[in-house]
Image (tube, rainbow, N blue to C red; front, side, top):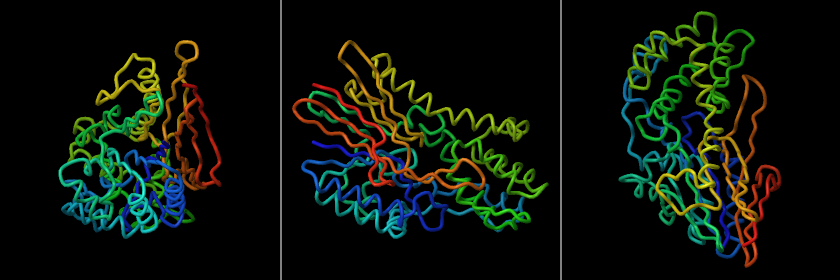
Length: 369
């Protein structure tokens, strides 16, 4: 048995800011599908946020007033049916989804919903996945597989993030506001002299605290302050921010809030290691894992937990396939991580591979039975 795992591809529609480019990441993903199909008894696990459905859904209200406040032609709009969104994503990412459809006819493919595509694990989700041509892709809330004598447990990981654990935690609203209010605003305004604005960079920024200084560099004096006021107003209107907090929020406080959110990857790693030590339980109560794999944070992590003599357990965070930026103008990082887990009669082996650079190995773990 061989498990192949990817997470956080964020396939989207052509009208939205691009986090996944089919001619680049799609090409590499098709190579992953070929690799899975070429081996015996392989399974591809899609560990959440494969599709950016929350980005496709506009905020419930406040878009019209946001546009009026900033003199931008943006208006409230209703959400579209989920099958229509999935068909649109298929049309915008033909290479990736044709490869996935072909693989699902040859090998086991399992999809685990994340916070950005939780809709596919709810009522109507099966029909929406079918509409994208993926009728043979299975859906599971998490994956637990017995590999020789070891348990491998795979979850997306958003259950440990309060702002994204539920649809009402605030994360979905922020995604909707960025894609349907902030980025259309940036695409509409006239840039400052000698300053190039790349709206797509906004969804690629990591750590997210960089959003505020990047916007301060892009926007003209006075426009930034108006923008912050309009942003706070639409967040309040959609319940993502309490009105009293909006009255006292400043760019400095926003930086602090975003920095706290960005520490999530460290908190997730500490919780995962506690699970491997037996000091904490996983959501859904799967078997105690020997290998625990998460996504969600967009930060690759790899940690070995030493138990009693001769016993080692592994925690992996898969990072993301979407391009990442750390500043206003520098080059994007486009690492494309793939986790491969296999075993024989003597040992289990796990390796993290960067598919963007000729399958370069990043990390390796071996443990005997």
